[in-house]
Length: 289
Image (cartoon, rainbow, N blue to C red; front, side, top):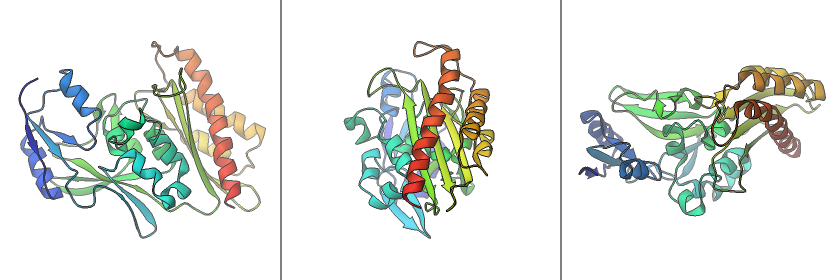
């Protein structure tokens, strides 16, 4: 491993300046992916920028009824925030499927987003929830939808000098519920063969007024499937609506054959898993009606 310089900036502008000065520089939030990539020789950054000292980048806070999750917040810390857990249990549960307990004590959902793995667990749940992230860079700050960050396996839309500062989730809407499920060969500590996230809003009469369905591990990036959500809106989530939603996710899936599963199997399972995750989200929405 080549030598590298380690930096701990105190402010966002300092971090941006360090990143902008070296195209090979990498951000260290949790480091559970970064350190493996460095040690294996996949990447050889000259500078590592540890963002954990920057104020506001560790922890969950509420601003104008929105949840703000600092980019260096460990996944296990999300469970400790009762407000976030109550509002968006699917997001918290997805984040706490990543690796082992020891990994989650360090790993962050910002890292899960920026590592840009098609099978990332937190990402479909965040997409379904309509989450956004705040990105800082040489040209200032911008807000991006989570589904717009990854552009391919290991690739993101972040520009030189940019990094994710925090993740933002709106307050849970009245009658809202969300959930995330994945299919893995083992009971834990495995990579998703298929992942599915759902977020629904139900009116008092049981009519679905809003729905977002997202998939993981079945395309080069996690996918928002607008047609799947549209199939549910205006219905009481009856069998015909669920069948139409399942057909939409199967149509959107573009998986590959690999050692975890064949493409045909993954396509079929997207429909199965999507129905299950909608049922979970529906139950949560009804419990909170």
